[in-house]
Image 1 (cartoon, rainbow, N blue to C red):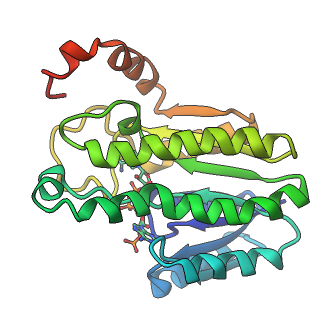
Image 2 (image 1 turned 180 degrees about the vertical axis):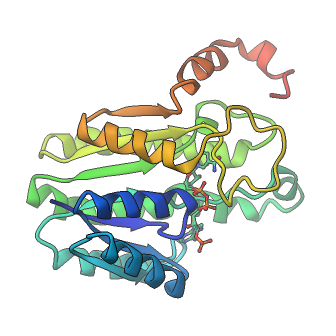
Length: 243
Ligand SMILES: NC(=O)c1ccc[n+]([C@@H]2O[C@H](COP(=O)([O-])OP(=O)(O)OC[C@H]3O[C@@H](n4cnc5c(N)ncnc54)[C@H](OP(=O)(O)O)[C@@H]3O)[C@@H](O)[C@H]2O)c1
C-alpha cells in the first residue's frame, strides 16, 4: 500500500487517477492551487476507501509551497508521486507575448522537476515507491502549433529519464506517460483533435504501467506508431508541415 502525492490534483485526469488509487486501497494527498476543490475530491476518495485522503497547497511557481510538500512527505512511511501539472497557452498568445514562456515551462517542467528532485532523497531512503510523470506526445517533436509547451514536455521527458536512472538504483520506479489528445479542461474548445481519448483510458493505462514497471508508455497505444512515424519525418520535410 502506498500513498500517492498527486501534483496537479485538480487536473481532469488526476481526479480519475485519485479515485482509482482510492479504490485500490491506496492513500492520496491531493496537491494544487484550489483547496476547496481538492478537499471535495479528498472526501470522495476517503468514501471510496483511501486510507489517507487530504488536500495540500501546491503552486508550481511557488518554491515555498514545494517545500511544504516535502515537509508533508517527510512524515510519511513511504510514498509515491504522480505529476499531472501542466499548462498550454495557445501558441499564438505566446508568440505575441513571449513572457508567457517562463510560466509555461515552470508549470510543465521545472516546477514539478524541482519538487521531484527535493522528494528524491526521501524516496531513495525508503527504497521503494513509484514516480509517474505525465509528459505528452507534444514533447516528441516541436510543432508549429505548440512548440513552447512541446519544448517544456521534452525537457520533462529528459528529466524523467535521468531520474529513472538515478532512482532505479535505489528501488524506486519512474514511469513516463505520453498521452495523445485527451478530453479534459486543457483541450476543451479545441477542434479537430485526432484519436481523442477519455481520462479513464489514460488512467487505466497508467496503473497498468505502474504495476508492470514499464518505463515509458504512449496512451492510448495508437500514439506509439503515430509518433514513430512523425519522429522519422526528415526535418527538411517536417519544417513545411502544419500537423
Ligand atoms: N489533455 C490533453 O490532451 C493532454 C495531452 C497530453 C498531455 N497532457 C498532460 O496531462 C496533464 C494533466 O492535464 P489535463 O489534461 O488533466 O488538463 P487540466 O485539467 O487542465 O489539468 C492541468 C492541471 O495543471 C495544474 N496547474 C497548472 N499550472 C499550475 C501551477 N502553476 N501550479 C499548480 N498546478 C498547476 C492545474 O491546476 P488548476 O486547476 O489550479 O488550474 C490542473 O490541475 C498535464 O501535464 C498535461 O500537460 C494532457
